[in-house]
Amino acid sequence: MSLQERDLKALWHPCSQMKDYESFPPIEITSAKGSLLHSSGGDIIDIISSWWCKSLGHGHPEILSSVKAQMDKFEHVILANTTNTLIVDLCEKILKACPSYDKVFFCDSGSDSVEVAMKMSLQYHLQTGNSNRKKFLSLQNGYHGETILTLAAGDCGLYGAPFASLMPQIDKIEELPYVNSESNDLETSWAKIEPFLDKNAKSLAGIVIEPILQGAGGMLIYDPKLLVRLEKWCNENGVHLIADEILTGMGRLGYARACEAVNVKPHFSVFSKGLTAGFSPLACVLTTDDIYEVFYDEYESGKAFMHSNTYCGNAIGAAAAVAAFKVYEEEKTFERVRQDSYLLDDSLKEVGEATGFLHNYRSMGFVAAADIKPEIVEGSDTKRLGYKVYQEAVKNGLLLRPLGNTIYLLPPLNTPKELITKSTSIIIDTMKSVLK
Ligand SMILES: Cc1ncc(COP(=O)(O)O)c(C=O)c1O
Image (cartoon, rainbow, N blue to C red):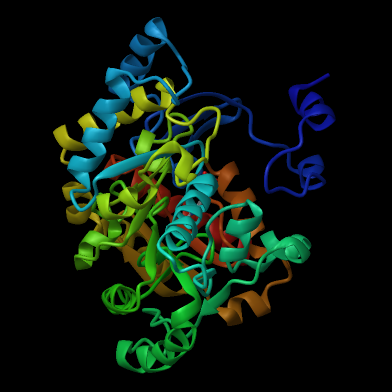
């Protein structure tokens, strides 16, 4: 039996219609290095950082050696009742990179860490005599993960729809000042948002946001100054601001926290993906001492935060994360992302100029996106344009994963310029052949 046949027989792939693999089998990866995936069919540029997490590419030597060295000591030990130098080093590194915070709480996955921040917020309000503060709001087009609570906080219908009956109601803040929309004016937008917030002010525990860039909702970028308004409103109304920095943090937008771009300090910030440079699952929630202290008391008070995940703070992830921070510091990665940001923006604009197929360009840090023009979509004889583009690009040596009709580039932060140039020409050829 071929690998593909064995795969189809035994494996249920994530976020996939399995039937698709019968006509277009999954790519067989044999090894990966830097921004390249080596496959049985040749090299493929990983322009999406393997679901947005491989911020320093595959097999980064410093991270590999840190992980290998840790494996010789121990790979995982329960984090309740124990400590170790590695995990404390990591906390200190994270807090140095995010100086507005005092405490780090570790989790296994991104979804889990967003839930942790929401649970902390709710319990905080309960323990400070505000049991009326039970509701959360989040942003239209947001994405926060795949657990029931994070699906409810998200606004990507496809992922949550079958589970709607289980999901708590989390209303969405609409009218965001998106950079590509006609209603991109912050004042007009805020004039509609503020009364909606005021209406909910007394019952709100927190507002969950992806700062500046909304990933799975379509790689949308909104005016960062909205964050300043939200922070001010939250502080004036005793509501927590919860920043999901899983995609945007750790350099993706050129800062440790995207909120840094506008000097906003949410009550909670949540990280995963780039935290370990995508080496292994690890996530964390950062918060401040004044929130932490509300949970600090005699055991009998019942005020402790009793959340646990088996692998939280696991040593493999921690070793990867400590090494990733070292590389970020030594190579000044975040600063370089800010300087080189134009590369991706230029790349998609070049595709647009060469093909005439794209519009709505947006970019920040090491992310750039654009949409296939509606007239091109309507004129096409294929319904799943994004999927067609993916198929053709893979054959040409590029791993794209369009979101509907949105094409985006989100490569490892240290991707060499030549590979971005090569990706640009592959996208041009791909789009010309798919969209003819
Ligand atoms: C903004 C954001 N939040 C949460 C998540 C969920 O993280 P995980 O897949 O690790 O659960 C993702 C994953 O893509 C994300 O982009």
